[in-house]
Length: 322
Image (cartoon, rainbow, N blue to C red; front, side, top):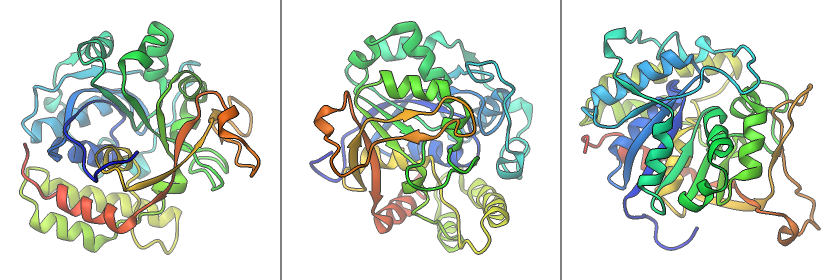
């Protein structure tokens, strides 16, 4: 990326599995003046598909954005395996908040996702912060026309040269449906990947969230501190001594509208499909590797401006809803 620090408004189709960090990422997208959310595909991942849809409905209702279509995502991975959810991290629905079923909004069929891509073709960015099942299915159903219609694909997933967060080598999104993740890495062009080695670099401390919560001018204000506190308590059990939490899924959205936030390397990415290394993200970082010889290399996030991230977080999350 290059140019100025801030882009003009961008049409975004989100693929999410809210989940606490997905919910914060969705709040950021709804509050940012340069992001136009045209639809949200909600499926399994951090929580079940039903709870993901309910949590998405809850955030949209708080924002008075019921006009944004919620699209039915997948119930589980392509293989048909039974999914494992993480209530100890993300809660039974949304951290400490048990969202009442009455918040559920109408849901569009999955075909709506491609209809939106067709409607905005040449002027739409896809951002996936959950499992990649639905995005892989779009490539299965519609092939390379997606690469023609979609400007860029922003993917939160993978872990390069750092431990995974669900196995010693695998990050949750790539591990949760490794076949789908590999399909997307193989088929999608103009891809930017935001792995754990970058999303873990920015730790959001309690004092930052306290500041956001105390100065917020939007309906998310009562929600931010409780869900962060729940998330932080879960992280402290897994990572003794940690001073705050990463918010993984907000990173690709923030990178979308802040060109100078992330430093990238270009490498071809693949994903291990099975066995003990299932979901491991693989790229060739040997010194003599020639990027020119790699077919459709992805931009892998490799560095992040931590101060710029925290400044952006505290600036946008206190804004009034658009």
